[in-house]
Image (cartoon, rainbow, N blue to C red):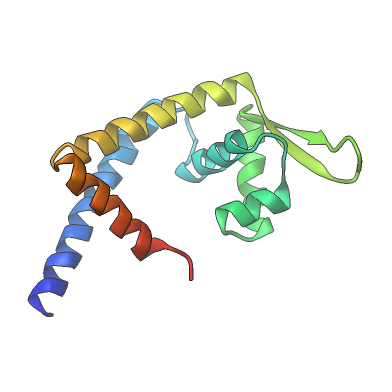
Length: 141
């Protein structure tokens, strides 16, 4: 492997390991059985209260079946509820509960602390540039 490619892959691997350790820490503060996928669904619901399953699946870039399986756990955990649409009773929307908001706040604070800890190793300009570059690398095509 070329030196630059090798350094890049090594850095990604190291960051990945840090994120895995952080996710284990995160799990310690959550109800038993809660998954990272559950948190991602919760984050999407909080970001767009009264979201439909189709909108949620599109936002998360997953199939509706995958979104439904995760939403079932989120609803079972009491983090969100299914609400019939006021105009079309056949359509179901998702609304976050107060318990879900507390879990989301915990998750957001954890994410913020993790990012701050990593980005504090860089100057503010370097951190901004890194995030811009990572966004370019991960942008949908």
